[in-house]
Length: 399
Image (cartoon, rainbow, N blue to C red; front, side, top):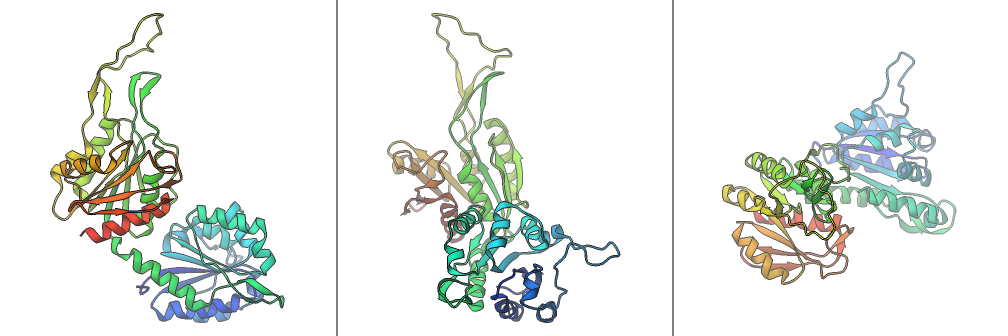
């Protein structure tokens, strides 16, 4: 699976830098194309000549290649790469990556990286265990980076403990597994709806719901990291997408989301309808703010919005996959089963407001997946990033 893959190997100033040569050799032997980016401290532990001989490319260390005005573009490297591995990653570089301190070519390349990033820490046991290092690692995880945990053993300090960079073969295997698991979405075009819609009552009020868009955006990131071409139709939410290759179309109302979905669906392989679309909208929108009048009731007549899932289900082709969502407050599976068959979905993701940690505005979710053959899979409470992977794995099994 690594043949033809473009991989950036970042090397920091650690005694474990010698292992990077073995990792590069494994990647090259598997058919990958490798570009080494090294810190100034890294060059104290392993020579550029060794690395360029193994990678068959000039090693990049500095922003400016020479005094003639030529320079190395971290932006171009970020676009070029299919994956970045920082191995070894020192406490200093981990801190800079977590805090966005772009004072060297390696960190600047990391910040420009559009592809998944794997980080293999290497340092003494006390440095690794320090709360500052652990906090920075948690920050990097929250950004979607993959941390390859160091092993325990004899360290350069002559102490023993956790901090040894994982062996090159183990890092190579993790990267290979990543491409193996995510290869089936490469080249697929995926439409994802996310967030709420807002239905105007007057210029200052609207009908909406509590959806944050976190689940939809987590799915979008996971699909893009799996090699898919992703289009997100997002309701009014403040979240930002990390993967710069994702196309985002912002809408406000259910009608606007419907029009985008109907237009885009014939051009995609998969549609994942994660948005919490308002079921109703005001029949009339006041042109001026509605003023309060004492002792007087206000009645707002509502009209049903168009059903996006049902509309797409009617025009779905045999080779397309259509995934729906159902957030329920009671009788979750029974209500979801009705939606599943009525809207011609391949499967529906069900969650319940009765489950603690599931639903709107949380960082976690607890789902069940109900398939068109009425089989049910239940999942434990997980982060929405982990839930996104479960949903993608289910999509891979559909067609």
